[in-house]
Length: 269
Ligand SMILES: Nc1ncnc2c1ncn2[C@@H]1O[C@H](COP(=O)(O)OP(=O)(O)OP(=O)(O)O)[C@@H](O)[C@H]1O
Image 1 (cartoon, rainbow, N blue to C red):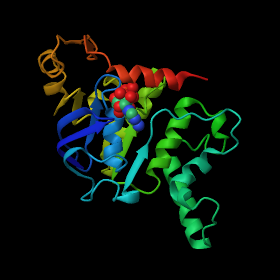
Image 2: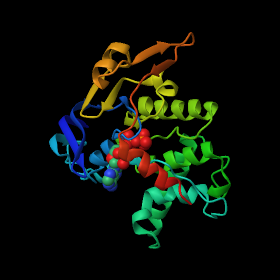
Image 3: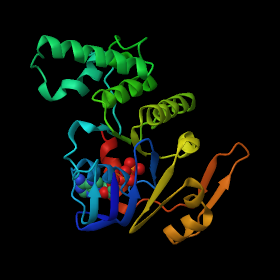
Image 4: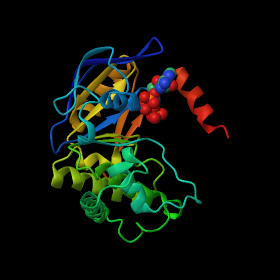
């Protein structure tokens, strides 16, 4: 996928502009930046849900939204009610024929679907709990099953919106390793929106940091530095490296005002 000079506007406000980014087959790229800067919106542009306000966007050689099942997508903030009776395999199956909900597949296609669903469940290491009701699976288990759902149609591009959110550290590491393996072994291009770069840092080819009005892309070593981020955010930002190699970004500006309002609404019962 590629963006050249891309910009996006929502409600008359330009969230970001001048974004240049390429992700090739087998590459793993992270989208980073403060809350509300427009990371999920970038994914929506790639899905064709929102048109770019400027620039060129191509996804697998097509216009956004036209590459169909060749793009796998894992949306942000998913959770299942504990009483939901659908099994993990059913959730993965929705990735195969969710667009034909309730319409039975003919025998041959049904067998092919069953085989692929089992294969992808095995790939993400979810076989032990795939027949359990999804609502009774842990957050990490649900996440693996949802990644399997996004993979079931053999996508060439995987768009993952904060898949490590709300997982504990061991599960973050396990899901990061799984995505890294899919990317490397299956040659899938991966674009992952991330809140914290550390769980995926060692696996990344490039990062793009978004800021209000701008963006900077490059290798993590090029981009996640005090100098680059201070310039991007036009405020002093300090990047510290801990003794175990993790990065701590201090002084990154807060979200634009509209953002906290939206989340306050999300949190209301
Ligand atoms: N449909 C919409 N209508 C109006 N404003 C919107 C809409 N969708 C998003 N926004 C606003 O656009 C901005 C970017 O939202 P987005 O979800 O892309 O941010 P984000 O960087 O992914 O944030 P987070 O890290 O909190 O998930 C926010 O200020 C948000 O309130």
